[in-house]
Structures are given as C-alpha cells and as structure tokens.
Amino acid sequence: GAVVSQHPSWVICKSGTSVKIECRSLDFQATTMFWYRQFPKQSLMLMATSNEGSKATYEQGVEKDKFLINHASLTLSTLTVTSAHPEDSSFYICSARDRRPTDTQYFGPGTRLTVL
Amino acid sequence: LAKTTQPISMDSYEGQEVNITCSHNNIATNDYITWYQQFPSQGPRFIIQGYKTKVTNEVASLFIPADRKSSTLSLPRVSLSDTAVYYCLGMDTGRRALTFGSGTRLQVQP
Image (cartoon, rainbow over all chains, first blue to last red; front, side, top):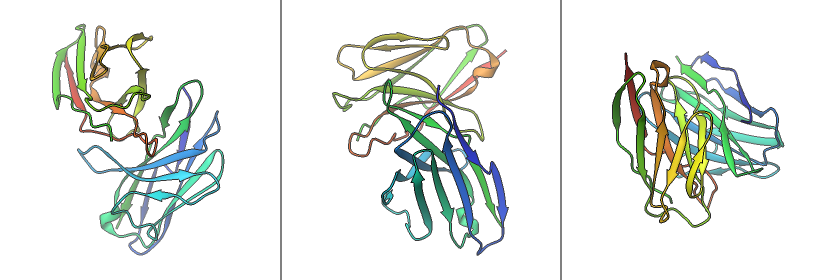
C-alpha cells in the first residue's frame, strides 16, 4: 500500500509553546489529507480535513485558531498546535487519500505530543 | 454518516481462524467497506477493502453480503502478532473522511 510519513514521531514541549507536525504522502499525491487525535484507550477522532490549496474544514468543537492546518502541496500537510497546554497532550495521526485505483486512506505512524 | 457496530473485544488462540463481523446498516450505495488494524502507539494499517461479495488478499478475506448491511473480516490462522484493535469503517460521503467506531480489540493467546 501507499506510504504516509509523519514527523516528528514524538515531541515534548512546555506549556504555551507551539508545535508543528508534518504529514507527507511519499509515493502518491494527496489533494485531501485528514488529521485525527487519539487519547489512550479510545478510538480516533477526526479533527479536520485538509484540502490542498484551500482552507481546512474543522470538525465541530475543534478550534481552528488553536490547530492550524496548512496543505501547501500535494504531498505535505502540517498541523500546528498553538499555545499548547497539557490537555492537548495526545496521539496525533494524519491520513492521506489515495484516489487510485480505489479511494483508500492511508495513515501515518502518528505523533505523540506531551505538553508539560 | 456511516455508523458501524462491531464487538468490543474478542479472544482467540494461535492457529485459529478469527471472524470479526461489523454491521453498517446505513452505508451509502457508492461507499467501500474498509478494515484497518491498529497496534498501540501506531497509526492504523490498511488491511482490506471491498464493495460486495468476497475479497481476499495475502492478509485476510472480507465477506460482504448482497445487502451490504454487514461485513466479516476473516483472519486465517492468527498468531500472537495479530493482537491489535481492528476497525471496520464506512466512508462519510459528505467529507470523504473515515469515521472511526470503537473497534474490536482482538487478543490472541498462545
């Protein structure tokens, strides 16, 4: 299957700082990428849909000013957690949509964010 | 929104065949049914995808009846490394994003 990478795989930061997470589709172009968040022992929760060249679409309850998403190219989307707080500590996972041959989403390995 | 329902957990032993059934009563006509596997602290891994009848790959088989209101993932001869959470997913036609249910936690014992 197609490969999606994330960087960094883990990050620890102080409260109040901003953290950027990169998501790349390595062997296909993705006009649409998605960002999920997963808390321990829970399922993945969709945060936002990232569309190349346009604004992201956020799910209800997700603050767009806190979770900035940029999808400047067909292979890269970034999620920036601004002014991070301990409650933002979570596992962030991106996925990229590969339209060919079937419409399939492939996931990155995830980024563990810990805010002190 | 394609809501899915699957067992919370299942137990099995090495070498057995495991079948996990998922119900998706309101799946849209054009949607594919997709199954993912997730290990702790990793992103979900694509297992198999199908539209109807039966699909088989090197990892699993997927059975989908004609009414498409359910699907069954079949894992032949499981091993300890198959211990994971398995998600059955339907595509949200509005956003084309995958909506995750609770998944099935499969525990394989020796």
